[in-house]
Structure formats: structure tokens, C-alpha cells
Image (cartoon, rainbow, N blue to C red):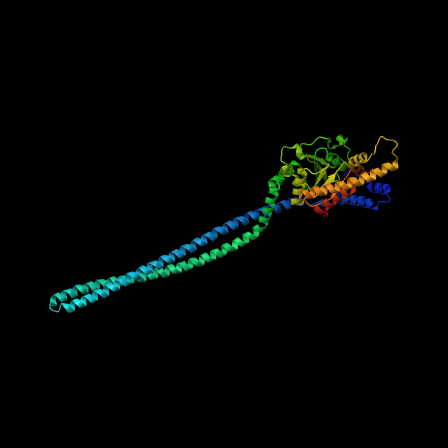
Length: 457
């Protein structure tokens, strides 16, 4: 961040001898820049977060597939059980038919024997006829006995078939029971794995009802393509600054890099009230000893993409942090950035720049006239203090309400003046009009250090 490692502590100490907290912040910034510049940076943890998100989605899909498989197994078990019951009923019906046929054969045998006996008693006078009738009856009895024997054989076979069918039905029932148990176990496991997915789906449906678009997890190839587009380099820290046209994001980047807006020959980002950036601009720190690269992100309103696609289309998931620069209130693109960063655990910093201009406007509203020589210095100081307090209170309240309206957790807003920030970075005398400039630098560097720095071997 420019020459912040140099004389900033001495400048702050000499200029603000009574503000111990400011000195402490300045010393912390110097220490952090030194540590970050001399330690090895590990990989951006956001990529691991995205891989974990992709794995969770894969687990959800597998859980759903397992549940569908369990339903199929349950249906198959039910079909097996129904078939076994049908086979058992068919065997029972066959056995009943064979038993009825056997009983009928026995009845005919008894009737014929009785008839033969009666005929023998009645035909004593005609022995030959009786003997002939006896032979006929005997033959008929033999035939009936054969039928009876055949009936008994068929009955035995039917009984055997019924026993086999019953054993098969019992085996089928056992198999069906095992299949059912396996299906139920698989269903329980699938339901457990899918519980989080259901909750996520419910949340997504609620968000869709409210008009909030779903968060899309980029694929690994999309991440790699985004890294190539921004010329991502391992070992460097990549800081993105996003905001609408005129919010002061380009001036803020220049101040972080220790450059004035007029220093175009030194690589200052172009500035203007209209959007000067239609593609992501890569802006390395002028001090090669500092492993920082800044990125000027085009405002969503200048691109032909929906606000909710802005985050992924611009590949913002590859950055170490994102500074969201506001003018007065959030845009839908700002909300999309904060939501997606929260999802992927990417640090965000809400910054309202041009604080000196906003405070001066409040002073004018309170009656201050910069061209009136009669305004004494004491009156100006009083108006400035009142306007500053009003600006800070209104900004914090507005940001808190904006975050609540977007169902986002409250977070700090940093109020800065780009000229004040530039004077700090360039080791000039820090202004008494500082608000959150030092805190922003310290928090930004602290988060970068804790996320990615490891001691050099």
C-alpha cells in the first residue's frame, strides 16, 4: 500500500500526540504490511469452501438417488410378497379341488359296491348272470379303485406341490422382508442425508417467493477460467473494489496504492462520474515489495447481465476480499455481492467514500458558507463537529437498515475520505479529519494475514 511501511508512525505520533489509539493502529498497519510482505501466502481458502459446497450438493444428489432406489426396492419387495401370497392361494385351491375329486371317487366306489351286493342277492336264481354281473361290477370296482389310486397319487402330488409352494412363499416372504428392511434402512439413511438438503430447498423456495435469486456454485473449470481472466497469481493478495459509477471506487483504489487520480502515468485507475470501467481492471501495488493486487470491478448497471448473475459472471469468487463502495444506499448488485460472499466465506468491507464531501454538504445545509469571510474559525469547527457526528450516525443507521431489509447480518461500515487515506498511505501528515481510514487498512490487512499467511520455512 504505497509507502505505508516508512514514516507513517512518526508522522502520526508527531501530528497526533494525544491520540494513542491512532498511533497503535498505525503501528499495527506497519507490522502487518511487513509480515505479509515477508511470509509465504497459502492458497485462498474460498476455493476449498467452494469445493466443500460442491461436495455437499453431490451428497444431496446421491441421497436423493438412494431414496429413489429405496422406493424401488420397497416396491419390488411388495411385488414379491404379493406374488408369494398369490402362489400360496393357488396351491390351496388346487389341494381343495383334488380333495373334492378324491371324495367323489370314494362315494362312487361305495355306491357301486352296494349296488353289486344288492344285485348278487337279488339274482341268486341266475348264477351265470350274477357271476357275469359280479365280474362286471368287479371290473368296475377295479376301475374305480384305479381311479381312486390315481386320485390319491394326484392328491399327494398336489400336497407336495402345495408344500413346495408354501416353502417358496415363506422364502419369498423372508426375502421380501429382508428387502423391505434394506429398503427402509436405505431410506432412513437417504432421509438423514437429505435433511439438510430439504432445509436448504425450503430456504431457497422462501427466497424465491421474496424475489431473491438462488446462489449458484461455480464449477472448478469456471473458477480456473476466472483466475486466468484476472491474471490470478499464487502468493499474491487479490483485493476487489466494487460499486456503482460515481461512488468513488477508482479513487479509493488509487489512494490505497498511494497514487493521486492525476497519476495516470504511474498507473492510476481512471476516475469519473460515469462508469469508466467496462471490464475488470488489474492494478498491482506500485511497490513491488508489497504482494497486493487491486481490481476495479465494473458496476452491474453498466453490464447487460442481471444483478443476481453479477457475482458469478465477474468471477468475484476468486478474490481474497471484496470492498463494496456505496454512495448513499445499497443496490441489488451490492446485496448480491454480500450474499454470495457470506455463502463462500469471503470477507467483505462496506465502505462509504467521499466522507469529506458528504460532511461539507451537511455543513452547508446547516448554514455554513465557505465564501463568507465572516464565519469565524470556532463556528466552522462547531459546524464541522456537528455535521461529522450527524453523517456518522445517519450512515450507520442507513447501512444497518439496508442490511436488515436484505436479511443480511449487520456489519461495520467504514467511512473514509480518499484524500485522507492517500495522505496516510503516502506518509504525509495524517489529517485530523480521519474517521475510519486507519481501521479499514488495519482490518483489511489483519484478515488477509489470518486467512492466508504462514511462517516461511
